[in-house]
Amino acid sequence: MQNESTIDPKIIEEVLKFSRNVIEAPKFVSAPDEINLEVTPHKVVQQIDKTRLLHYKPISGTKHKTPLLISYALINRYHILDIHPEKSWVRNLLEQGFEVYMLDWGTPTSMDKYLDFDDYVNGYLESSVEYIKNQSSTEQISLQGYCTGATIATAYTALHPENVKNYIATAPVIDGWKDTTVISNLAKHMDADKMVETIGNMPPEFMYYCFSVLKPFEQGIEKYVKFFKNIDDKKYVDNFLRVEKWLGDTPPIPGELFKQWIKDIYQENLLIQNKMHVGDELIDLKKIDMPMFTQVAVGDHLVSPECSMPLHYAVGSKDKTLKIYPTGHVGMIASSLSQKKVLPEMGTWLAERS
Amino acid sequence: MSSKPQALTSIGPMRAFAANSKKIAVELIEINENLLGFNQYITEYYKQLSETWGVAQKKVNQKAPKIPQDVEQIEAAKRIWIDIFDNDFTELFDSKKFGENYGNLVSKELELTKHWNNITNVILQSVNLPSKEEVDEVYKEIHSLKKRVSKVELELKKEKRKNAK
Image 1 (cartoon, rainbow over the protein chains, first blue to last red):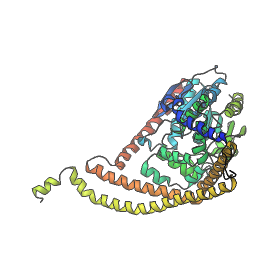
Image 2 (image 1 turned 90 degrees about the vertical axis):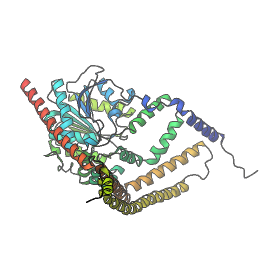
Image 3 (image 1 turned 180 degrees about the vertical axis):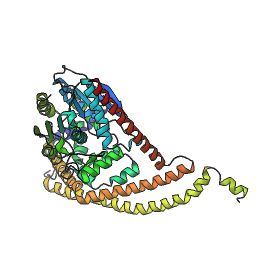
């Protein structure tokens, strides 16, 4: 017959293989509870309210005098910086001989709805810095902030420059008006007052909605198709599940902090204009005068480079470096690129100044 | 003076509830008004999504082969579909019209939640439990006290350190 259409046998083979993978997936996939995201050994050295200060056990001996404190983001949890032994940000820094501390912001409850920028900057972060200074008998520490954690770290560094020897800002949220992401568009049109007044803390469900509108088809469909295609690859499955578990676990954001965040950063853009107040104090970015290292990713669809880069030009530091990497928001901190390029460059820069 | 049967039915928690039931009725009327606004914004929300879907699908139809003949063509068609849909939807989510409508939709949802909170408060008060506002006041007070204590503790630690040098 002339009009008879033929189907490539490979198509049938692929469809059958994919169906088999979906059916057999439960055999290869661990339950979320079985995945331990705490990879590198650490001790909780200080606990204030729900926050915890973690101190990581040195791996190859401490070679540098100045300890490093990491201020992680308020969205999701710090585990992404230690997601897998081969992709661990923390482990890499320990191997480079740095003494590493991490501030875990914990899980705020309804009772914490009045926590604001002042509590985070002049309370939790300041207490952690004081603890580290006491323990290491140093007058200054190195501080790294990631994403929204970098906004808090930036405010802290501007208010307490005497405590910070080196400042590293990784994908910091700084200039809300220049941010070209979907998140920024949603934030600009949000009635933060009404949200906080009505429901208290910013609920995780709202963050999950924001995640769902970021590359919805790549992230919502293609990612899972790839997962089922690679179900036989133990390493791929392990990595995938770790990141999925991390993505599905974001704490609420305290109401007052969230309100100030949306209004001061995204709607009125006060931070970059040196008009933002934390407590009673005005944040003047020019007071950041220590060596500073800014890291941004060109493919960042959560915090666009245009939102982060203005910090580099706004600070008073003379010794400052801006690095732009061909990756995304998470790729910059938890990928083979971060291990091969981002961390070695940051480590070299920091070692020279520690 | 109330008669005995009337007094019997109006004592205890139910008395407060009966007195406040008018408030609940007002809240329910306002919920209905809000639902009208909410429906308007949610209709617009789905309209924007479905229009974007339609436009994106047309673009895919123009670019992708009608019937993929082999695995490579299926893969290419899927890539085209994902890229076009992601681009078009990101453009929508980035737009002012989406941002404004989404903001209004969330705002209406919050108003509905607020009415529900108000109704819950009436019920809570009728059984002599603290309202949300009263609990919030306690939270605020605790927060303020904790903040003051933390600041004093931190200052003490700094002072101790200074003295130890």
